[in-house]
Each structure stands twice: as C-alpha cells, then as structure tokens.
View 1 (tube, helix red, strand yellow):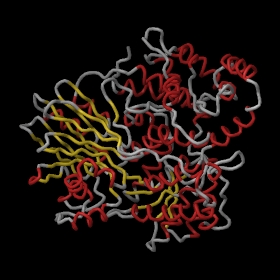
View 2 (tube, one colour; view 1 turned 90 degrees about the vertical axis):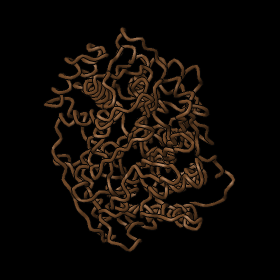
View 3 (cartoon, one colour; view 1 turned 180 degrees about the horizontal axis):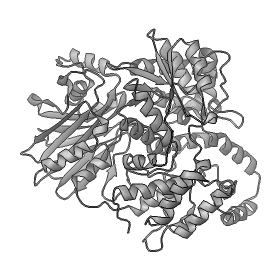
View 4 (cartoon, one colour; view 1 turned 30 degrees about the horizontal axis):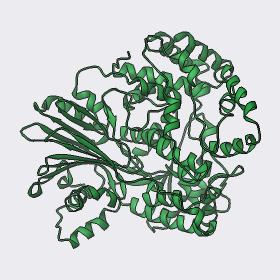
Amino acid sequence: MCGIVGIYKKSGVNKINFDLSLNAIAHRGPDASVAQYFLADQLALGHRRLSIIDLSSAANQPMNWDDKGLSIVFNGEIYNFKELKQELINLNYQFNTSSDTEVLLYAYNEWGKQCVSKLNGMFAFCIYDKIRKQLFLARDRAGEKPLFYSTKEDGFYFASEIKALLAYNDHSPEIDLHSLDLYLAQGFTEGSKSMLKGISKLAPAHTLTYSLLDSKYEIERYWTLPKNNYSNTNFGIDELALRCGQLLKDSISKQLVSDVPLGILLSGGVDSSLITALAAESGSKIKTYTVTFPGFSKFDESSHAQLIADYFSTQHTILEASSIEPNLLLLLAKQYDEPMIDSSMIPTYLVSKEIKKHCTVALGGDGGDELFGGYGHYDRLLYMSKQLQHIPKFIKHPLSIAAGFLPIGFKGKTWFRNINTDFENELPLVASYFDIDQRKHLISSNLDWKPIAEESRKNSLPNGLDLLDRATRADFLNYLPEDILVKVDRASMLNSLEIRAPFLDHRIIEFAFSEVPSKFKTTIKSRKILLKKLTEKLLPPAFDKQRKQGFGVPIGLWFRKGKWNQFLKEILLLEPHPFNKKYIEYIIKRHENGADNAERLFGLLLFVLWAKEYNVKIS
C-alpha cells in the first residue's frame, strides 16, 4: 500500500515543489520515498512505499524496465499476482523480484490496456510508456484505491490524494458549487467530480490514457456490474450459500498473503465473523482484533467478537481506543481532502490507529452490506413500497409537498417527502441531509448556486430487475466508493495501515449481482439472508445472526452540550463560511431540543474546518 504522484509539465517539473507534493502523502508510505524524472525533467513520477510484499529495496518504485521503456508507480495489491506471474513465466518472462509490481509491469507489456481485466485486487497505478509516449492510469473495479488527476494547458497531474496536487501549486483551490450541492444533499460528491474545480477523480473500473504528444486523453470503462440472470436460474439458497462460501474462502486465502504482520478486524457481526471463520480454515494461526471505546458501552462489541475468537481459537486482542476530543476533527479535516457527511470516520480512524500498533495489514468486512442487502434502508424501502402501492397519487402528492413544511430534524420528515416516489422506476434519497428547500435557506445568496442534486441522482439511477436490485446497485456504484471506501482508505492510510476487503473480490461482486435473487438478500422481515444462511454452516450456534450494530459514536449527544457543543458553535457561528449562520443557529437549537440533526451539523462542521485548512475559495 502506497501513495503515488505524477507531474507532466511541458516547461519542466519544479523539483522542490514535487518533493513537497510527495511528502504531503508521506503517511501512505513511510518505508521509502523515491522520485524519478524523465523527458529532460518534463515528467516526474514519485512513490511513497508501505512495504507489504517483497520487502527488499529491489521492489521499490518507480520500477523501471529500461529495455521496454516502461516505468510504473502503483498503489494497492494484486491478489492473483502469483497466478499471473506463472502465466507470464510460461510466456518466457524472467522476474527479478517477488513483488506484484513487477508482475503488473510485465502484464502491461504483454496485454496492453487489457491487462486490467486480468487483475484481481485493489489498485490505482500509472505506467509511463516511453515508446508510445503516453501515460496509462487505471483504478480498481470497486474503487478501493483513490486516484485524482488534473489537466492543464501545460500538462497533466495525478496523485493518490488531492493534498499532493495542492502541495505542488501555490494558489488557493476553488470550490465546485455543483459538488457542494451534491455534498449537502447526499453527503459526498460522486462520479468523476471532486469538491474542487479543476481536479477530477478517475472513476472506479476506468482507465485513462494521456498522450504526451498532443496532450489529449481518453477515459474508458473496462468493467461493469453484470446483468441480472438469476430470474432464469433454479438454484436454492443452500446451493447459493455453498457457492458464496467457496468464493469468499478463495478471496480470503489470496488476501492472507503478506510479508508483514496481518490481522482481522473482528466486530462480531456477520461479515467479519464469516471472514474469521474462513480464514481459520487456512490452517495458520489467525490474529483478530476488536476495539472498544471507553465510556460507550452501547458500542462495545467485544463479547460478540470474543465468542467468535474462542470458537475458532484465534489469537485475539481487545484494544481500547483513546479518548475522543473535538480537536480530532482538525486532523480528519486535513486528511479527508474532500469532506464527507459520515461521523463514523471518527471510530474508523481510532480503530486504524490502534490496529497499526500490532499489524500493518488487516482484513475487514466492507462490501458485504451492498452486495448482500445488509443496510436498514433496504427493508424500509420494501415496506414503504408495499404500504404505499394502493394509496392514490392524488393523496400522496399533497402529503409529499406538506412534508416540506416540517422542521429540519423532524422524525419521519424524509419518509413523508418520499411518499410520492414511483417505486417501480425510482429510488428515494434515503440519506437526504439537506433537501432542496433547506439548501436554499442554508447556502448564502451571494453564491451563484443552482440545485442539481435531485436531478443528478435521478439521471444516474442504475437499472435493475426490482426495487432492491436497483437500491443495492445504486449503493455499490455511489455510497460504497464515495463514502465507505474513502472513509476506510483515508483513515487507515493516515496510520500507514493497509485494510483489505475480501467481499470486494470482483468474482464475489459478479456473483452477488448476477446469481443471487433479491429474495435471498433482503425482505421486509429480514436482511442479509444468504450470508446468514452461511453463518448457520460456519459459525457457533450461540452466534446472534440477527444483530446489526452500526459503527459509530454518540455524536448526537455530544453536540447537545459540553465541549463538543461549544466547539460546534465556535466554528459554525463565529468562523467565516458560505452558510447562513442564523439558519445554522436554528438547526443547532432544534438539535439541542431533541431533534436529530447530528449528521447535518457534523457535515457542516467538517466542511468549514476543511475549507479553512486548505484555504478554499468559495465564490
């Protein structure tokens, strides 16, 4: 796991600035830092290394293959690198290291752009092809590893994190108002947009080829979610559970390969417990870790984790996180180059910090909810659809409009706003933080802003066989890569920790969306049905498979009084920002009096801290 930076500048790369850019992401790779310059210093490639596979200096990057004119900087892991290596050896390739980086470099030489379709892993990389005079960039299918880029008249820039791009230039970045609107509506930006003008994201499952000859670039999608074909299959839940278990076991076995200490993040929930169970079948001694938060017994899952650890005889460690102070948000605002409305970044960071004291690689359960129907809004959507299908539209429409007059934070407001949804063709915005009317109150009238979030969401909805299929696909394509995976990547890499996600093996993704019927994922009465069937086969009888513990901290309570409340008011009511302070004061008072505005306030707070940290221009 590493950090990468690349600058192509026709007038020449400033080496001092490039070092600043590379050092801005030192946390992603503290083991080695290397920069190399090509084309008479017009092109620089830099790499910060966190050594995982082949710890020798021979595996450092940029890695060059002089005979072929190829150089690579690579962030991630290729889990099937041993199989690809053997395939390449059979084609007469000779290797000098045992790293997956060299395998990737040779794979590009052999198969060109199509090499990405052969990769099983999480990755973001750039290959400089001297002969073709081009840069070839790619990002993994699910979007586990980040890759930002910027095109300018005088060249092309890319990096693992936005802060590396900002460090190279000395001008203040400027907010993208469309992205701000998306952020306030749904909690994150999406697609290829970032929060800043002039900086884009390479979307998951895409490649970018930039020509050094004419400065043109081409973006191509190399993988898509498979079409549904489970309506034509006759497999029962037992057969599908067996198939799922086989795929997950093989994914885990590939992801257990590491030349540094490795562990499993064990919460005691369905996903992490299944990973532990199947990892234990490998025969090696498995290390598991659970983190507790002092004073928050509601979030203590250690007893559930201990049950699994004892049953599978893992080497289990219970870690205690440090106390949580408001100033932690200053650190997170700096690390998260784009703010996001998800306060669970706080425990995610603290868990990563504690785990890093014991290992450098950890396996987690990310992806299980999106693939197999684990989120609470799935059964609620099914319930709403069933209950509302017989209510005439002339009744639902005025109720939906009337919901707009309910105060912010009113319980049930979102439900009433969504009552007019066409569940046959649409999806309601279940995690709506600020609706269009609230954004009009919130955003300063001085800004040339237009609401686009609702229309953008409508236009980006994926097709699906049914309501649940559309909902899980939408979450996989948006919420997972733009919230969950961003949260995990930035929090873990700030602590120089690599977190792997066995559920996001592309074979499991394809299985979940093409072979598993919605009825085996979620119904009105139950969620994650297929995985729970798998728990019956693998986990101890005493395991509580119905338990679903959200990963969070009591941010709502903190914001009502004490030092967190004071910190909130100091930032949002005294610091300069583009929001209506009287309206924010109203939101805070509503929250103090019992309404639930915790995540809304967290999102505003993080945005203001982030904008101040990076001196963002908002106009």
